[in-house]
Amino acid sequence: MATLKEVESEAGFDQLIKNASPSTLFVLYFHTPWAAPCAQMNTILTTLASTYPADADVSFLSINAEDLADISESYDVTAVPFLVLQKGGETLQTVSGIDPAKVRAAVEKYAGAGTAAGKNGIPPPLQATPLQQQPQTNGAGATKDLSSYVPKDSDPQTAPAYSSNQESQAELNDRLGKLVKAAPVMLFMKGTPSAPQCGFSRQLVSILRENQVKYGFFNILADNDVREGLKVFSDWPTFPQLYTNGELVGGLDIVREELEADPDFFKPFSAAQPAPV
Ligand SMILES: N[C@@H](CCC(=O)N[C@@H](CS)C(=O)NCC(=O)O)C(=O)O
Image 1: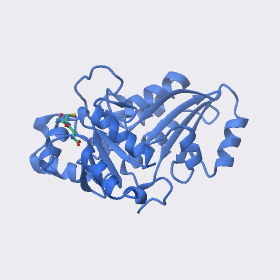
Image 2 (image 1 turned 90 degrees about the vertical axis):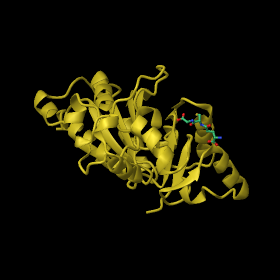
Image 3 (image 1 turned 180 degrees about the vertical axis):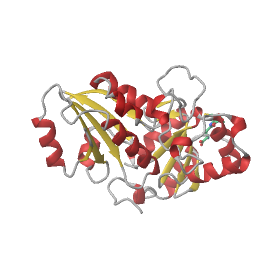
Image 4 (image 1 turned 30 degrees about the horizontal axis):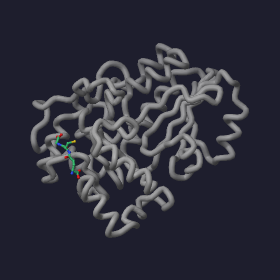
């Protein structure tokens, strides 16, 4: 059966791509060791890979986005987890964040379905049950984003569907407490970095990009509990909200002020620096 292979070096990656047949589908999975959602994505992709035979024309590669910065830069990776589907040197599709159904649908679209037996081994969220559902947006592309979703349960597969009445206040606070620490820099925004749904969020994404900050993000339009809960939890009424090491920095205006006062504000979180552990 096919496996998810860790790419060890840029040279190794180049070699793999160069030697591949033009018909091989590459599933490039960018991750970092410190981003909690990547652990879930790892399980999802390992299971999905196992549904294909070893000689299938599909190659699942896991790439540490920080250690192999040249590769992640060449694929415009600004947040993890991030998936690129590529064939014959052409990017066919990207998937940002954890969305098991979307990941599986994307891979199957280009590689065909895996084996039925293997499919049965895919955790439930990969089949029908979404981890969260979101109200339909205006169709601008950010229909679902869970990139830095940390489930309230220890088992990611049993994370609750989006619903206001399923989660007590204490449970929500517990989830929010984990979410704000899901990555050293966490951005709670409207939409996704590639498709922001609000100008303030768009501007903050640009600032993070300019400063080469590696960050996790959460689309608050995907989860109204998080949207409303975070306003109370952090006593901050608007979005975007930026957190570093679990502490609220503020919204767009505050981030601008911080940067004005200290242009190196993001240096500890910059792609140029080793990731804090
Ligand atoms: N000046 C604010 C602007 C942010 C803002 O006003 N956001 C509004 C509109 S996008 C908001 O989040 N409102 C609450 C909501 O939509 O839930 C900042 O510095 O971040």
